[in-house]
Length: 206
Ligand code: ADP
Image 1 (tube, helix red, strand yellow):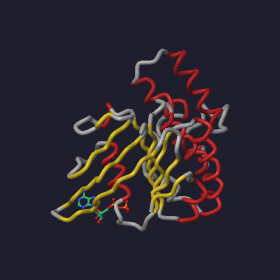
Image 2 (cartoon, rainbow, N blue to C red):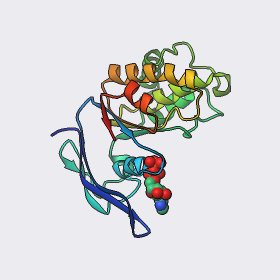
Image 3 (cartoon, rainbow, N blue to C red):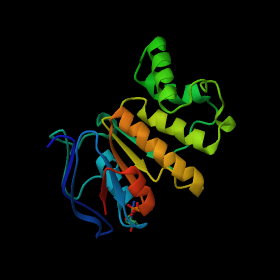
Image 4 (tube, rainbow, N blue to C red):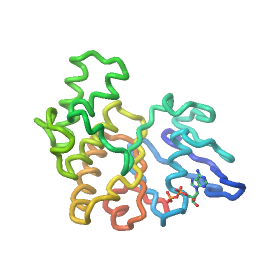
């Protein structure tokens, strides 16, 4: 099966399993939510997929390729965290262009990609805004655009709306789902909020 395949994945800290025997498939373009209470191992599972932690058991495959030993930056996966702040000293353009400059794209390719991303998150014309001039919801949309900028094969979002109030969260849930579906990216979204999982997901993993 193409996409992400976890088979009997396990991870122990201090000789106790934080994750045991997790098997899961996320197909191409699927939007899966990991739903569970704090401490159940959701973030650890994302870190294992990203390659930020090493597996103690099982396997992680993407499009049939075993990722054991693959460095995080070689996996082509993106991450968006609640506390992964935007660069405060850069404007929106600087934030969105950062990863693209690292990929050595030409200036005109970067300009075109930033325009495309801003249109995607409904922030056309915001390129020269400073981060502190943005509302909370606008910041989250810029953060989402930044995580999508390098066209990740898989995007992982770890409680990205955790710090926002309820009204804003609900409006962003709808927007995030629409944006991820428009891009067609395979995604895993972590939340402890059941309503959020139902608002966002194609598939819910409990
Ligand atoms: P969740 O994201 O669902 O809140 P976590 O994946 O953060 O849960 O944590 C799962 C369990 O693993 C918790 O008991 C946590 O204390 C433990 N844990 C996570 N990271 C570490 C670590 N680096 N060292 C020791 N224990 C850890």
